[in-house]
Length: 425
Image 1 (cartoon, helix red, strand yellow):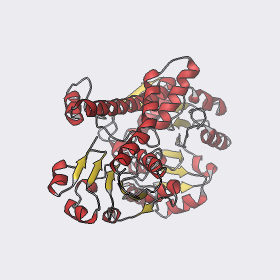
Image 2 (cartoon, helix red, strand yellow):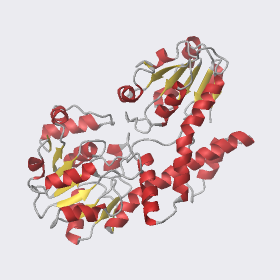
Image 3 (tube, rainbow, N blue to C red):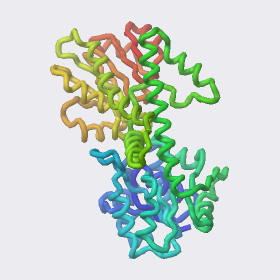
Image 4 (cartoon, one colour):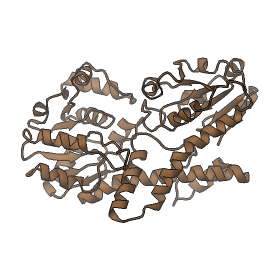
């Protein structure tokens, strides 16, 4: 099948490379000509495990192409996937659909009437109706993405489910054909288009609420003397609750949860529905970075010009994405304190972090360098190499002794055995 994908970001690229590996003829479209040239040369502008190799295989086989020409990209396509960004409006919290409708209007003169248009971007409920009004004669389908950053290819090839919001049976048949080469064939749930648009928001908002809940429970456990890890384990054994997303940490971040919770809360207000749980999760998550920064500063309040080492800036392991990263927010709060020096390390996200933090921190690509003469070490992203660090070496390099593990990835015994002090949530 000939497939066109508009957008070459964290959704478009894994989806394009994955579909090409299934045997489809895929053309990815992006208005950034320099980016297109880099992609043609096999240079991936983002980090996602396995993506670079799969992309190069697709290009070499001729199944995967890149272009900045809309007419070239959508010509003859049986289906066009819209995978452009829908960023948050900072004033209202609603999703900004400028990129989506710019792409829709640009494709209008070039798209064939038989081509199916599938919206993979996360969009407000009712957006499919609006896109269909711009493209009269084309069937518009909601095909939300559920790719986790860091696991995008795994999720593409082994999805929990594929949600299809299709009004027409023939459009639904095209989506089934698109995923037919997968083995095993994934579960495909057909719903109405508005239900499909809602499922994406409802899923992300529920997970964000679950994260906020376990973080509040962690704070409660700290006050009453309970162990949050034991509490989470006991809760997770209840089949009605499950163990996923019950790990306390610095809060949720990334390109989805923060903006999607705000977007559905905005939609609720517009619809006259009070989404109080979601609103509480948003407010609590926004406060968490400041609260954690205050905890860190309290541990070094007796130090003159304290030096704070930070391991991890990406919002989670497996990605270089720092959008809405709790780690970035914590660092920004730390920098508001006079006399503090912050030294940071992340295996993949330093360049992206620099675009936000500028020269206010010291960057180091070698994780042990960051702890030299540090008064305290803070772990904010769950990269696996942090859990296997040489703690004896760290003890020799550090000026202080405290290791603050906000991701619960370190065995406390390893810390204590090397003369350091372990602190978790």
